[in-house]
Length: 348
Image 1 (cartoon, rainbow, N blue to C red):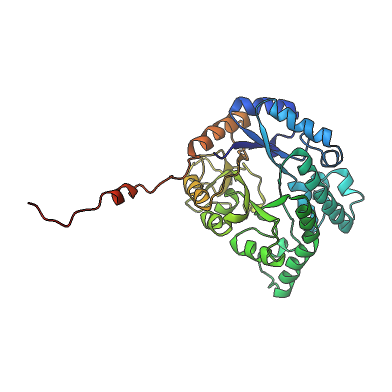
Image 2 (cartoon, rainbow, N blue to C red; image 1 turned 135 degrees about the vertical axis):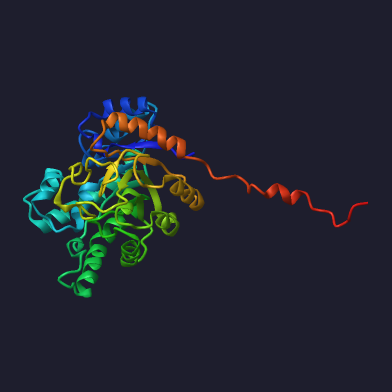
């Protein structure tokens, strides 16, 4: 059965050992460990197998299995148009002097190290972002020349193919979280990204439906189209208003939790992330699609809800996922009728 695990990205302020203790008490069976705080140091884990093993043992002491590691923040810098915002999310060794191309090159090297860290931790999946040199062109006005978009995908392929080759040498998959600001953010852009890197076998996906629902993208279709490349699933909910609101899909430059995104009326939201089961994502349809494509990996709770205490929400979300995590049927419900062939003889 698929393990229900906690993504530690929203918990890196908490010491790893303490988080393991609390996650186990909430009912989680494992962790998707973020490369942040003291949860995992990429360079140390890549160079010191004893350190990586110790992190794994810390989780195991609480009955938790590490199923993947995440390096979203560094991955973002590989293709991005670098500015001062990146300094706040990157390790100092990656930021360096802040020269944009230097940052991108150091981020690429850090991602290669992340594959080595994954091997030492004992996992074969690294989740993360790619960044994008063309996200700022997503809304096409002034009109964007098609060649500019082509160049963006070429840039992605040039920067990520060597990283993916390094992953391949170590037997590790990179699972992109398809997400606004990435090279792939919906179904069409995902297909184009796959084509750009010639469907590299190590370019896989971390499926998170919350980032599809507010874009009005068919997230169940995504599972069915790309199910053979899904290596991790983020269970995260998002409420989308059924009626017009003051703030739209693009967020109006207001922060998550702002009253204009979530007004006094519960029926007037633009969109906001919510604790599992309290939003608009149809998780039963996702589980049915995951069953159909044979996904047996982890269901990783990425808990984000600005209106709820996180420990309450994470524990509630763990229970929700365990309840919805049903197995596919082992047989067709009407199969038994095939064992009783009707007779052609009439009544005697």
